[in-house]
Length: 409
Image 1: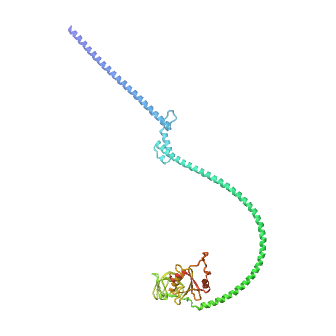
Image 2: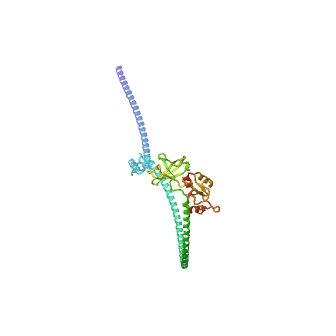
Image 3: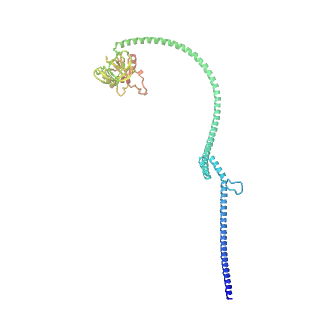
């Protein structure tokens, strides 16, 4: 009995343990189920939150795209459509092809817009310049129009004045024609009187011709007398004044056979002529003088193929080794020299100076001309008595410049 009770108690305890285990398992499983449900609810809540956040972000992105679409455009026709990148790219390519070189290098719409703005600003500046030029042209046109209107008014006034003057001229011409006809009649009368005077003048001219013929005969007789007197005076011979001794073409120097004893002085110039041909070969100027010869500088040569040679003749219009030339002076001084100083200089080179022109005079040397003290005007040489005497006696008249050049003064 007690064994059965112990066996029954043992069975009951087993069931109690099993029930406790089952209950424990149920509690653990329930706890786990509750925990799993809690975690699932938490995850579901997090998923809802994330989903809402994703919807919020998506909506924000959609709003941004819509805002960009509002700014950029290029959206499709459907409601809420956003900017189409392909359309933007096509527009960008078209902008590159349309705008300047800077726009062609653009890689996106921002760079293309920047290049377009740059071109636009440049065009605006050009437009302003062109507007200013147009305004200037308008002002110039207005000014030209005003000038044209003024000129047109002046032209009309001038035409009116010319027409008036033409009418006055016509009237004046008619009057002048009448006056000219009267003058013509008067001139005809004067012509008749002139013909009468011409007849009288012809008679006077015949008388004058006869008188002039008689005077000419008298002058011829006087000239013959003067020629005889001149021929009786020993003149400078038309013969050489000396000859060339030696020539150095390389040095441009030569020696002549006239020296200090022949009244040669430095500075005198001679013309060189060929000994046989008599043709002028050139000119020389005396540099240094010895007793019987002088060194000369060759100033010029007429023909390089016919140079100055030994035995060529020398000539000087104012120098004559065979006789003492006679000269007279006429002038109010001679350069920086007075008449007395000029006389002394000529005496040094062997030229005798006389106070008056006579039949023995060879040269009349002219100096500084005279001036009228009252009017200050130049007195012509031809009005001077010594000049007239020199012309009548065939005396050679030499300007002071030529005399100094030939004599080396």
